[in-house]
Image 1 (cartoon, rainbow, N blue to C red):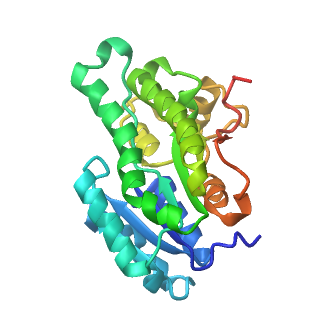
Image 2 (image 1 turned 180 degrees about the vertical axis):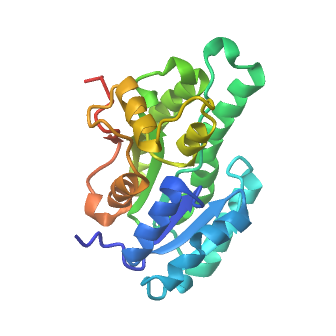
Length: 268
């Protein structure tokens, strides 16, 4: 399916690994021009270096990578400015940068609560504030916030992250209303358990007496979390949905969320 992304300019935060890295590749394959940022510029460069050498045509000319911490408004503004200088416009923004804090309520320190809220909110507000005039200028801007099913279904082992994600889901709905007059659509993708670096690291940190393979360990995790498909998702299963929502094909979709969770959501 042609997502009509050819030559459209899409900004992706957190583009060095996982969902962000998969989305950068999918967008390039769709013909888009992509500006990706990450805190570790060297890692981002290494992660995306192969894209111009693996059948992506002129991908090197259609990709901008930039070092940027999304919590730093000035750094984000510089990233957006560099994007416009390079490509002349911004048509879409995917706010993907983020991480989870695996702690229960009583284990979470005061500064960790604030850190989670700062990342989840400023990680969206800073890029949006900087990109908003450019998104509006084209008359068909699109914003996709990568969130999690935790926003609707709290996880006690992720107390602060669950609360922050719920707030972001609420904010996304507000943004979809307030930005609609400017022609900007705003939607969410709600992730379940996705096979990314975070889960691989937790697997590597398992006790020495746990001899399960990754397939066994992740399958048991899926069963414990009530994932009806019985497995973790993969990044490309998320990136397709994000690419669809940021594309003109979804021009009548705003203010909604799509689960990519293998059926873990127990809400109606």
